Length: 156
Image 1 (tube, one colour):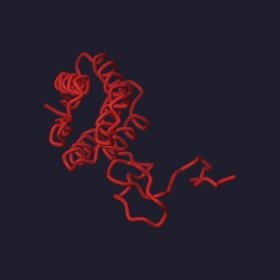
Image 2: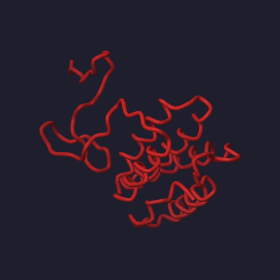
Image 3: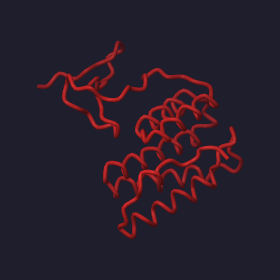
Image 4: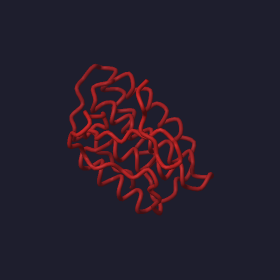
């Protein structure tokens, strides 16, 4: 049986390097910098960091930053951070050429972001939802989505 990488608490962790789309590379390869599993930033820093990563075409890394906020943030904001993380994973699936995965995650993100009447931190939930719907239309039409379209603005 193959031994799995584990962290200090015994949880499975894949320490293999990853490419810019989050796919594992062979051991010993050079990949993009990983987001620490224990990342815990204030909301504004989280959003700024995730935005920089999105702007650099690193949606998978942005997802990891947003996922850390979802897991470490206040329970009352869980749907918000989960929706943003799913949005970034949807973008990752587009980058990886997986329209089915992209559709699933973008629809989940729309559902979660749509439940927040007044998003905090100047998050542009309506703009993100409109952008996601536009991406879904492009996917439904079978059109290629340019990389520049995969850099949405998280805040208004």
